[in-house]
Length: 423
Image (cartoon, rainbow, N blue to C red; front, side, top):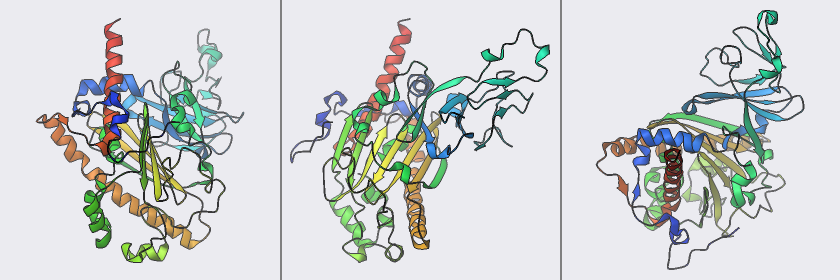
């Protein structure tokens, strides 16, 4: 895996000449035709993370995932053979949604021995086989073996469950590439205490990825969340990341921060000192194997002040590993050209006492406040982009991952359009 250490004079962007350095076209976030092609070219042909294996702890466990923008719903289940599978959530009889509770648009989870349709009681095994048809004798030459649930490609990487709507897609490991290979071995499976947030955002999905793919904004947008001394320091010196890397279609940013406890107690709030926690998570690293000797892909700059690595797994999955020993995932699910569903999950090692639990709670609510500040700018951005007054925008060196995201998305849509035109 190649790593670049930025020289005193130069830029991160120059390592990726295919991205260029000119203004970036943002009509990819406002054009309905581009959005429609983006769904077909990217989301219907790319590996998408839909959760973790801890949500399927035993045989018969299942959960559903609504992919509203893609006009489908999925069932993820662990079969009697322990295999994790994915199916389209549709009964083969008359097309009713198979697994749902009171409201068909809501996601659900649980444990069962089989899936039974609410409409006519057709039944399917955990492996997707049609096992029972009500009044089967009145159908015409019905072969149950031909009417199992419609399967979806499903593979697992480091406990993360991925699906792909394209049955001919390359294997997941090949898609993730060498950069993500360097993360393997991190103890994700030890961090099972989860805090979750979900919000509908009035912007194109790429704009929220943009917001988290750079910290250039942090000293300004989040200034009021820090004590005055820390805010003045950040505003005065700006921001410089430790490392950027692109392994197309994926990318990553490595940053300082999260070192605890702070050398100067006055630089944090009283409640943070009391609970030994804050935005960067609990200060006390959990006692779990795998945190002392990190995988080679983390902290690529080998910097003593390293605090966080954020991996942007194309198209819509962000994975953030924090130095104090916890991690976050973000998902950005497109709903319309100007709307998406944002999901955030914070993962900690299970707390051993009340103080550790409160430390996690503080980290979770602090994160929520910061995330709301990021989201607050997005609808204003979307509105003005849609005005069409300005369509191309200058992107600085610290925003190289933003440049990469838009250039790569536009490339994939162009390839899709060219292929269709050639038919």
